[in-house]
Length: 151
Image 1 (tube, helix red, strand yellow):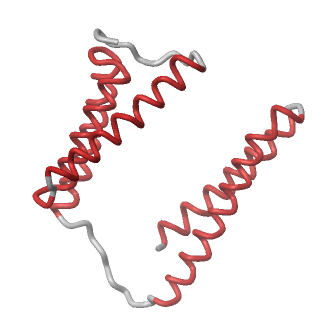
Image 2: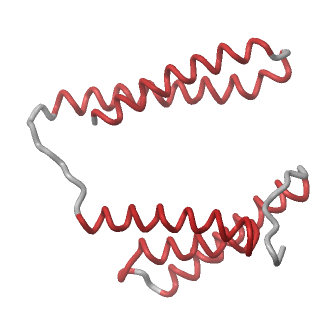
């Protein structure tokens, strides 16, 4: 709750600074960044109000520590993220690296409750989403993506 308040205040200040920076752009160049920043500010205010309401409801001094199992998953996902960046850049490229990373992270976080049908549905959906991003960014917009050895 306190973290939500701190993050929302930081994001609100950051959004205001960036919104002020968009004044240097011409009108057409500033429309999309201003829209995104105003939307971010609205969501930030909602998060701040929600955090304040929850903070007032819970005035007890409950200390919440991250469980060892959850901390292990957080560290594992962080380590795999760094590995993903390295593998994506040097070996597999954006397309294959992102697909493998997403599927592995899903399988790890889903754990023993993962059913084969859910895994296949998620895998096909995730492959489609990554392929759409790869095609839209790499082929249509000509954004340089990591190529790796294979793609």
